[in-house]
Image 1 (cartoon, helix red, strand yellow):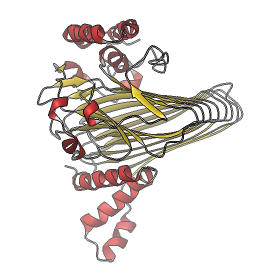
Image 2: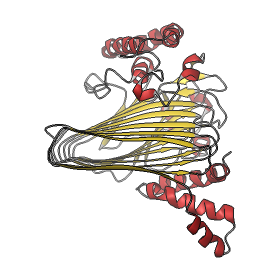
Image 3: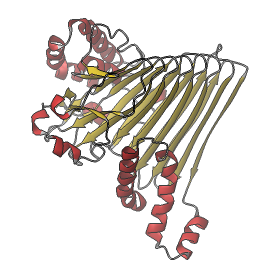
Image 4: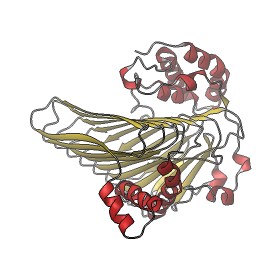
Amino acid sequence: MIRATAESKRYATDFRAEAERIAAQAPAWTRSARERAWARFEAQGIPTTRLEAWRDTRMDALGSTAFVAAPDRRAAWSRERLDAVPLAAVGGLRLVFVNGRYAPGLSDPGTADVSVGALADGDVSFGSLVPGDGHPFAALNGALFEDAAVVRIAPRAVLDRPVHVVHLTDTDGAVALVHPRSLVIAGDGCEAVIVESHLTANDHGEYAVNPVTEVRAGDHAVVRHYRVQNDSDHAWHVGGVFVSQGRASRVASLHVALGAKLARVDAVGTLAGEGGYHELDGLFLLDGERHVDHHTTLDHASPRCASRELFKGILSGRSRGVFHGRIIVREEAQKTDAKQSNPNLLLSDSALINTRPQLEIYADDVKCTHGATVGQIDREALFYLRSRGIEEPDARDLLIHAFASDVLNRVRVEPLREGLERAVSLRLPRVRDGR
């Protein structure tokens, strides 16, 4: 249990009135859940480096910053302005939330096979995938989120377009704390692509976002979930993604972290049904003194399941990356096949990566491997490109982009993949030079 800190008590004081306002407007059935979430946050508090799961990521600055509630900025946005934000337009259905509030005028929701709306009394699974302990920021989200993106995909529906959930932060200069919330319920046998983007209109804004996403994939469902974080370089981003999948389902999760001065994401996938498959990929680019922490957990809770995990980091300057990848194989999960890999590319002597692959195996008939590498740009490859007349900065950019492309090429939505490639290319000079 995390001991409550002075910072968490101050959060309780600062946001008590906000919590009461939100609860008064929320559906009655959610109020008790919000109260329980608030109590969990107060009991756990802001995590400190004395905790094993947080020892490489200091939350002091986040805990000591006097945040305010985010203003309602929906009226300041038009479709044309939104489309000009990088990665905001990828085609398909689009649900837009500005500072955690649903913006129907900017959204294109709903087909016969997809329904979107507010939480309903029937959403009994809402919040059920979030563990009670060990995730204090998820508990804070559970108390303070306003609108939730709820995407329900009909059983056996095959969507020919992605569903894009855009969480846009525009605090208009306020040092605000925003709590985006998403819930995806994929019916049995359906096939769908979900894109979740965390974007900003101000590359230099100081704010914090605390998103939580739950994905429940039914039996035989095929779900691809692409999560993009492109917040301001002066922002904090603390998020959680919790996935549960049924029998013979296939889930592909991909995380791309491009922004934020400090980011921490917990990605938890539970293979709850026999014969499931989970693919978990990630890419993060760091420069300056930025810090990104990914904690991943793939929980094999049923037999004959397989998982593949590839997380890549590119670091320069005095940046710091953290990857803690955990694979759990339960006693009943015989015939598990799990592989995990974390290659990292360091572009400066001052950049640092802390990588901890971890296997917890309680079954005796399994195939499990994991590994991590930390290296620099291949000098022979660089020399080869230089010998072909390519200037050194361009040659380095080509090699860095090739390293990242192994993950980016797994994105099946072409406009999103092209947008990510452009975003990576724009950052490459900064990353290459360590600025």
